[in-house]
Image 1 (cartoon, rainbow over the protein chains, first blue to last red):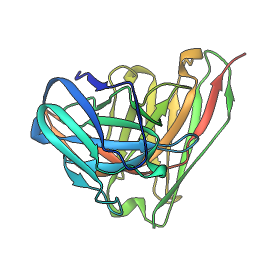
Image 2 (cartoon, chains in turn red, purple):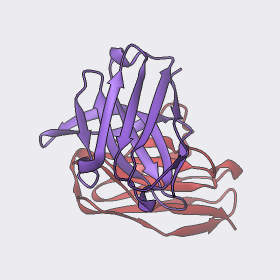
Image 3 (cartoon, chains in turn brown, orange):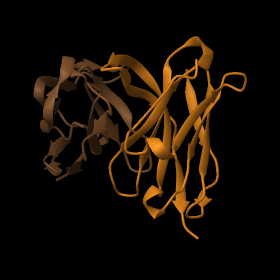
Length: 108
Length: 126
C-alpha cells in the first residue's frame, strides 16, 4: 500500500499570497495517477485536480498541480478567502487507493 | 447534474451491521461509471472502503474486505454498503461518490471520485 505524506500539516498565509502544498508518496505513483481535493468544514471533499495536473470542471485556473513519481505539488497562485480549507491528495495508481492526511490552509 | 444522497441509521450498536444506501439522481447507474464509498472518522483523514460497477463487479480495500459488502440496485438507481461486526473505530462520516475515471491496474480497479454525496455520520455505540 502506498502511503502519502502531506506537508506542511498547517499552512498560514494571507489572501493574495501563493500557497504551495506537497504530497510525497512512499513508492512511485504510476502514470501520475494523483488527485487533489478541497474540503471545507461540514462539507464533502471537492475534486480539484486529477492526473496530477488536470483541473476538474469548474475549478479556477489559480489552482494548478504538478509532479510525478513520488513528489507532487498543489499550487494556489493567489489565495482567495474561499480557498482556506483542508486539502487532501489521493493516489489511484495501485490498489488500494489511499489519501494523504491533509494540509490545513488557514488565514494568517 | 448528478447528485448523490446517503441515508441510513445514524447509530449502530457494536458487533452489529452498518447499512447505508446512496441514492443517485440526475444520472442512471446503468449508463456506466463506477461508484464508491469513502469514510472519514471525526477530525481525521479519508479512507476508501470499496467500489462497484453497475454490472455488480466489486472491489474493496483489503483492510476492510472481510467485513464489507457493496451492492447495486439499478431499478432503484441506488447502491448500498454493509459493514459487519462494527466497533467504535468504524464511527465516521460515510460518503458515497461517483468515480470520475476508472483504471484497471494489477488485476483490479482504481479511481478518483467526483462528485460526492454530502455524507452521513454513523456512530457506533451501545
